[in-house]
Amino acid sequence: MLQIRRDLVDAMVAHARRDHPDEACGVIAGPDESDRPERFIPMLNAARSPTFYEFDSADLLKLYRELDANDEVPVVIYHSHTATEAYPSRTDVAYASEPFAHYVLISTRDPETHELRSFRIVDGEVTEEPVEVVETYLFAHTGADDVPDQD
Amino acid sequence: MAVTVSIPTILRTHTGGEKSVEASGSTLAEVIESLENDHGGLKSRLVKEGTLHRFVNVYVNDEDVRFAGGLEAKVTDGDTVTILPAVAGG
Ligand SMILES: [Zn+2]
Image 1 (cartoon, rainbow over the protein chains, first blue to last red):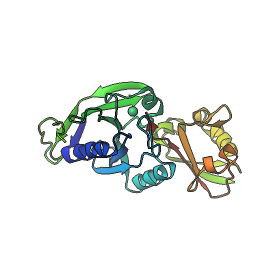
Image 2 (image 1 turned 60 degrees about the vertical axis):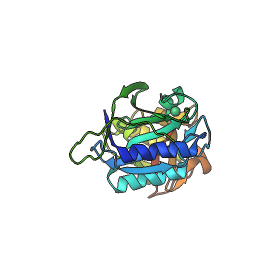
Image 3 (image 1 turned 135 degrees about the vertical axis):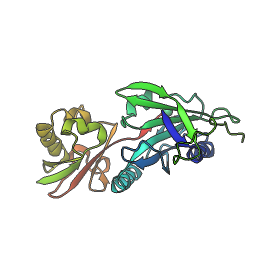
């Protein structure tokens, strides 16, 4: 299961909407072994494409050095699908190489309602997991389910 | 020529969990051979048909080797080689 703060969900969705029709991508970092997404890091899609995304190679190196220095890991790796459902494509599966990350996909194909789903991708195998949106991690307080945006 | 190689999470099964290992060589190809000698199985995760796998980014210090000769990229004593899986998809 992915437990994630509402403001982080809102930030991913806003990024996906902003870059539509190109795919948006980024990371939410958290302390090593915490499995708790905390720090929102939108990345540039170097491919600037509606059907592909890729972190710029220099940005990728900078990101991982920063995570390492902070004892953080990419708890969430997110990207958007702008014309298809929020399910990992064959290409997504082929590239997936963080077995401990939650791969979050956001579909912006519907201008009114987004779709947000989370997956583990390990050794080419995709497993969907529930997403629990919370207001804060402090008290493990559970908020209402993710409400689709209305923009 | 001793270099330090930084290993990503997904490849640490080949290094007994180590985040960083020592290797030697004066080109990236030689460094990868040296890695393979000490940590069998790494080479095939990095190299495919004589070139670097497209799923992986390799840097010598701060430079992506794609822009520095690929497997022929020069490596000198004390350099850091960083291996990172590309974060990409469709
Ligand atoms: Zn995708």
